[in-house]
Length: 85
Image 1 (cartoon, rainbow, N blue to C red):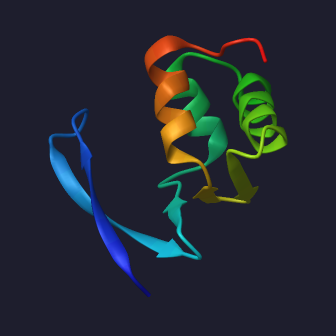
Image 2: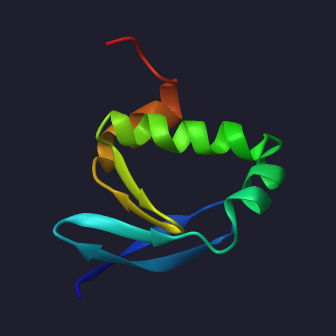
């Protein structure tokens, strides 16, 4: 499976990210509940955000596995916030 390395400034390291059909595959290191708590949001809010990104065709989610389908658009949203379409 091809991989590329992704810089994670928040943790100060670069990690390999496997790619399947051009989409980066990420496995959440813990439960969505724990991640939501670390982000300061409820599990429901975190799940809703993931669902909205999936509905936009930017990601797919299967339990802890997330495929990043449109990394450029995700980066744009991270920089500028969501823009009305």
